[in-house]
Image 1 (spheres, rainbow, N blue to C red):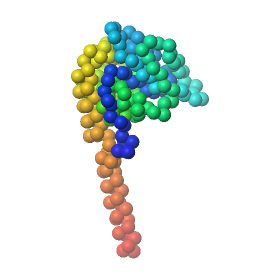
Image 2: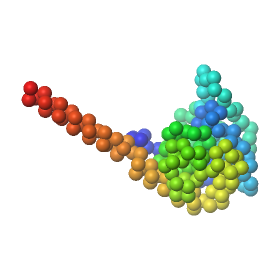
Image 3: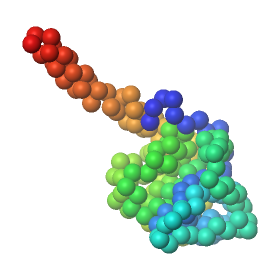
Image 4: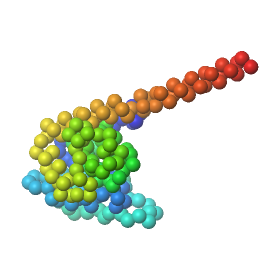
Length: 197
């Protein structure tokens, strides 16, 4: 990500953010089931969703009547909403990259991802930069979220670690610098060749 589009840092807190489209493979149903299964005083679940247009794929239904949830359709202020949360949950099945996960990491949220072998599962370490749960398992996700809810210091530590990981490996200026250097060297050679001709 470029430094101009770097997300606003989280102010912390206990709210859980889920942000994705309503395509069923994004796993909203798993998130809702896990949230409702949490025991004791559960944090608010903030659902930011995009309604797919002209898609033949199955979609999940919104459920704003569920207690302890707040819903935002196509929010233009996602950065502000994210900065008010402390935990970000991805329930996508085999997400190829997951920009929303990277944005949550960059903002310093504690990210919770499925242990499904996908992109972020291969790059992040459970208990270091994230927490992992068994994919498509609302019971296990509820267990992880319950543990985090009882341990705000762990949430803060994992969020800081995730933010440091994002800043170290995913800033556009650093990530693409090698490619830019190669192109500049190639252009210098071409320019030099043209001047000699």
